Image (cartoon, rainbow, N blue to C red; front, side, top):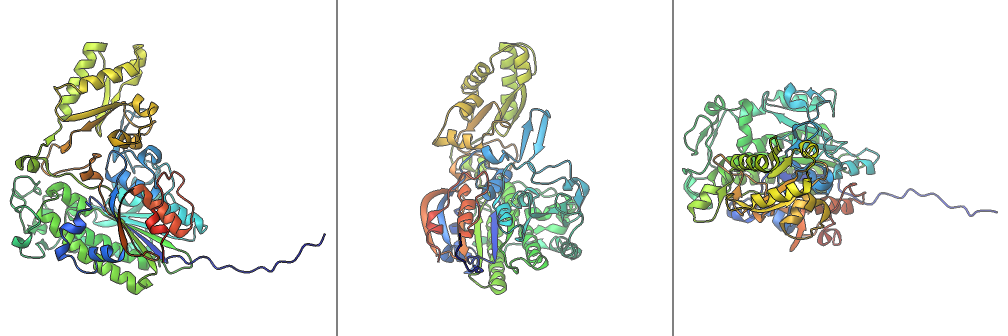
Length: 537
């Protein structure tokens, strides 16, 4: 049989962006787009709103809303129930201790200081969009992730990219032997500039006259947490003087200059790695950690928070202008989101007659242990209480021949008694494993519940109640003040627009997969955002 001859043709790859820039702003509420916009530049946050596609009702779809799970969820398209990063730190029964989400005892520091180098993404159990981009090009695509926080870099970089984070001991960016045997020359050259030293040699003063910060409460108030060495939280901040009382170079994290330093490193990475200059799409993942440090200490109604966003807006305008010049305005793709939002300071809410409170974890733990001894006999029945989860001593329960499900139910009923203020709901591990919850906070808990790693009892606190024993605030709940975050795409192929449809951060990675025509991350549970992928230009 004679087969017809077919001519071979080289089919060009479909057009793709030269560079994808993922921006995660640590602890950004969606409302910050609008709250401070009167003084935003035209080219920063306003450009994202005007030229990007904005999903105004974007949320986290699990509990707890922390930095580690947030970054993992954005880049994997999955929730902690799948990717395994169930918190920043969590208890491991087999080890009998807490572990850190990005810790890896098998690797060592490269640059920086030794204790800060035991970092890798190995605790993340699924691939990320960064991995899939690299696999799609047989690893010709490059991925570089940068952040002040190590978890803000190592998790977005996935298992196959490069990650660099800030070392508070040396003031340098570093990595670990998971990524490199030694720092690339461009990183060494960047560190030699000693920019952290430069930024910390000045005062942090407001950009504008302080009485013009009308979106914030009074600068001098009793709700915020002062720096060590200061009695009050008032401008200006003399950084050289404060540095001697605080964590060496770590002070920069709680100033807007941490964002400046992060972007300085991003520019260096673009040029050092020649990102977006090859034949394949590259990815740069940037996480701005400083808004989280500032937000924790000063809260979302502070002058410090407002000033930091006005400064970040100006930095983003410069960055977007740089990308325009370097690649062409529509030749790169940007997405912007946050790893979580934040609650208001409890004491401030109380001062405004809003129900709120601080949850006394130590009291609850003491009462639980007493209840267990009274009802089940002597023994250490509670192994750990963290992240609003309680881990029972399963070995002791088994040795005593008791029913673990009954103990879970007994303790759940006990926790819901009137003696415990601040507890709204309690669910058991049995509930999480047997039931299929599709709505409400119990659904969010289930999406954050990992069968192998999570606790035996899961608590949901009342709105505006926090496990928080210091001035300032925190996050971690499933309420909208913690879940409602920006989701914006801008640049290559994106038509400007907006939608108020409910979407989740786990929809970001599959949206990127559809835009780039690459495989979905292997644990993805999110769905592509149709308003974006079905109407590209």
